[in-house]
Image 1 (spheres, rainbow, N blue to C red):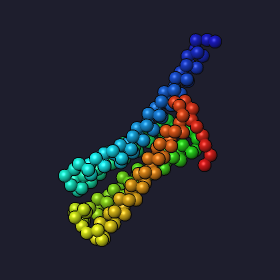
Image 2 (cartoon, one colour):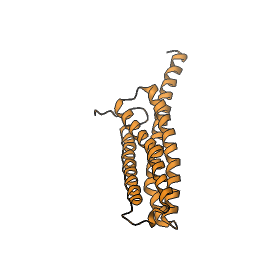
Image 3 (cartoon, one colour):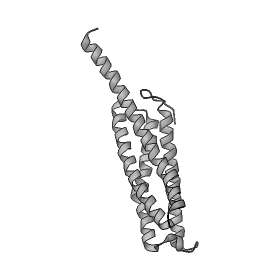
Image 4 (spheres, rainbow, N blue to C red):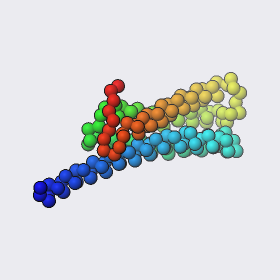
Length: 171
């Protein structure tokens, strides 16, 4: 075997390992960006902030940054996957979590912000007030979507068993 063919074999193996590690890192970061803001930062903010209004404002900023980073990382994973011929179930999960991040960031969050701007301090409104109930409904939808996206990201981590191979399943 010539030195040139040995180098090509090594470069192909090396590229595959690097791409696989890049995918795993990207997916781990995406999972972390769903878990940490939603299930660590937001509960701490609401427990420790001076008011629920301040906590909500800070949580909204954290979710904004997390959603943008999730979309950036999902795009990077998609670029690597495009070149590797990744199985359809993985694409579907990545697309689902990206779609949820897009909807939360560009549809639901602005609607919730408009409700807060219209109502002022949501927590000071009576429970039966229409704006408070509407905000609660949209918050619940957003939270449910966040949970689904978190589960999708966790499933992606489980389905990519190591840095080179991918577990496939039929849907």
